Length: 385
Image 1 (cartoon, rainbow, N blue to C red):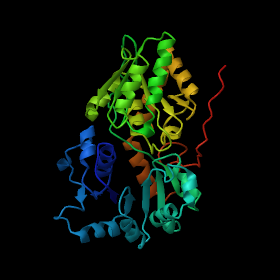
Image 2 (cartoon, rainbow, N blue to C red; image 1 turned 90 degrees about the vertical axis):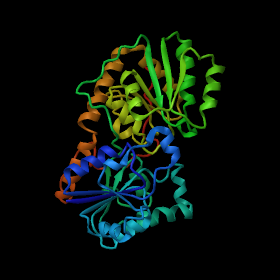
Image 3 (tube, rainbow, N blue to C red; image 1 turned 30 degrees about the horizontal axis):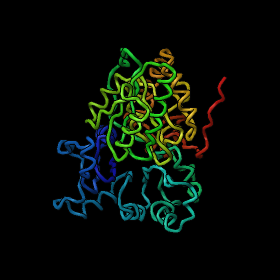
Image 4 (cartoon, rainbow, N blue to C red; image 1 turned 135 degrees about the vertical axis):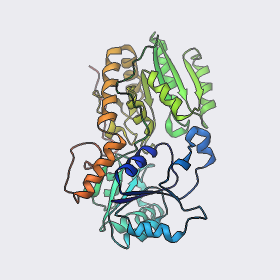
């Protein structure tokens, strides 16, 4: 089987998926349409792509454009990530099996489907091919809802996600921190709502709980977060470690007790959730995050909090800090979830089985199971007992 994956640029989140495709397919191509931006490299995304012989760079003068179109036409399967619509249009002119690998379209609100320009954007990319051999690989639990609102058949939507490089240990790393260690990882942007973590730290301190909160990353909100930390007199509890290479981030996760993901609905997936869970770090995740409904089984392998409900977030964080046994249990289940059910190896194996069976194989959960419609208000916090 020959498979092509078309996307903007290869990054460390995609390498495990691509190497699995290369391992299992007769021939695999990653068609890269743009160089990696300098800003991404500064955040530690830079990788040595020279060692991957499956990359075809459309912006490289040594690559003939005709060769790229030959691949789009002749490959048994093409997976379209972030790429020009012209590539999808060309492939669909032959009506050959293809998958749109996408986060949700209406991150800023489903009402935006009524904006002509937004509707046209979705139409040009996917809706005009809704009756062809184009299926959706949902890198957001909300994508099937977004598409169904515009007439795309939700039965053609399958659970997917991002499958970044994760912890490779056979057993969950042990935690041996003198105090409960909490980490927040990501770009410090408004959509990430990191201030929630700082404010929750104030409540933890007021309750007399012993903990530390480390922020890993950088961004436009960094100075604002530092100022809030000072205002709330949390300098002894909250620390800013800056950006660091991916390998070091994983090491930080391996030692941390609790991982926080506080983003709003504009967080398409949130690959750091996969990464934290893979190390056995107990995750507390906003219900708005695109991966939340797929990765977190509430109170089984992590905790969810109702987006917009800061008290729910603070109460659940307090509960985790107070209860080490709960953290250990949820962290172990998180470790098992990624290792056995949501890895790149599992995803590629299932996708290839789906293709070879002509869609007859079915799964009840995880990658390539049907992506049921999930709306923004799907999660409601349970009342305190």
